[in-house]
Image (cartoon, rainbow, N blue to C red; front, side, top):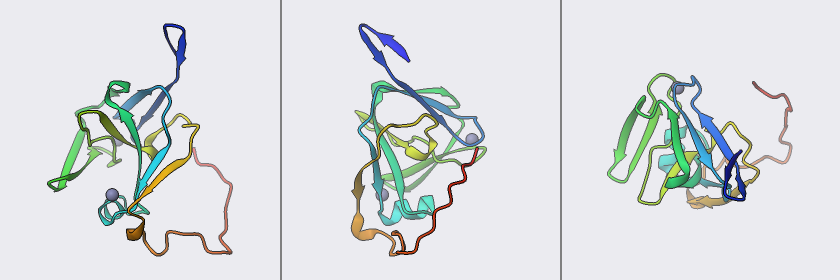
Length: 140
Ligand SMILES: [Zn+2]
Ligand SMILES: [Zn+2]
């Protein structure tokens, strides 16, 4: 927690699997955006990219900002990964926001998924079967 005037601002942290890259986000966020487009499905090898949209002024690298490799897939689409462990981490920055991969957050967000994008491109398996099984074990 961090004091700013009379307000106590929440600080959340995240980083890559090997720990070489780490970041900090100040203040509360709206929730998670999931993009199901075919590019996001391919680069994650999963249902798509889960993203937090963070105003630039509230995002800061703690370490490893340059310990990254960027793949430019299309003129308007690139991904950045940790050079050591390959974790995808914030890369895309526009004038106002940083796009943070939600799975790299270590601190609870306190919010759920807010928006699904490109739903028509969703993989047909991206849904629960009626007899889906859940196992409660927690990893580290
Ligand atoms: Zn790493
Ligand atoms: Zn996408």
